[in-house]
Image (cartoon, rainbow, N blue to C red; front, side):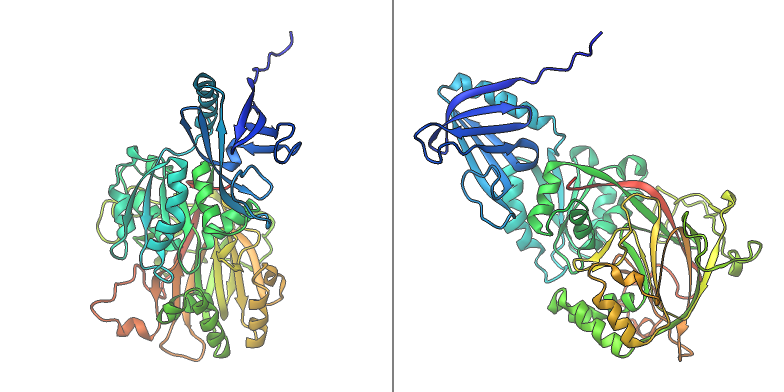
Length: 504
């Protein structure tokens, strides 16, 4: 007996499109029209994909109005350029009578509704990130697209450090189809930590997250757009959220004793962390501060003693040296399992998620690399910033962290690596050890040549441990760090724990 495929309704009508007589056809999710004989642009058919080119849709009497966001040559009726980038436009289609307009409008509305687009979003704007441009980016670049799409929203600006975490911890998630961060990567990390501290964390962490780049690094937004072959822009990031496609995202538990932090982007120690954190004094330069301070740091290159232990992913079992399983990864009183009750975080608040259970029972083999190191970079996504592909093989939800470790090497070699970072080819250098891990443990040591100074360990822009001079000079107004520099810090990956809006 033959399978019966559902029939797709085909609508055909004589209409006016932006004032020009045309024959219009709607098939499935595609609207097409050809100017009538004798009209402007005779014979040139135009097409509009509802899913990938329409921001929003309205019916007004006999008029069907489409707010479009398409590349030039696409369905934009008014506007558009010649460079292939997406532009906002409008297509106004006038029907012969209101009954026909209602029939077409109902079909189009139903098809747009079936795409699973968000209906209401909670938007967090960071007014302090990057060049402090978050509010203006929201007002001038985000809001016009959101309003054109018809998506409802609630907006709140952050007032202080960890405010986004507090918002996510207490927000009534039943009211929203997603939480959007107009910020750098740090605010999204705060949101993830806030969601995982809730008693209903299992449901909370599945609320889709969105990122609109308004910070210094913007690695997550760059990674998402790059993976879909989309140019990096604020408007493309907004449209990805409006379209409503989602993908799973790994979450990494960063643990030292009872202190715990959840990361979704990266953890760094050494050169990259030093540049990320110490360049804060040049924040007025925007993202250029990173390039400027990186050059300064390479000219006076630091190296750090220490050791790294890891459980390699399949295919990387030969990296490093084998570890004595009896003692190697449980020294200094530290265990790979999380043996505390996990119900409270370091600040005493109720903490919903306790992190992944112990992995030592799985019989996985640990391996190690000894320092000194110039830089240790652990990435969850390919890009650490707009123009630095730190982890070219990283995937959003493969269950592994990508480790890029720059070993002790001359400063001019390090400078050469920086120029190869744009496309990720630096990982092919003999100075770099690049591999994937399921879990990794950092035992950070002192700076080479110093008997007192350590370094900085930075996760997603947040200093989680600091062993340099500034730590001892910190005043009462400086926030305390979550973890101590020196004792081991372990990272373990939860595959696909979170959900994020994605272009494809």
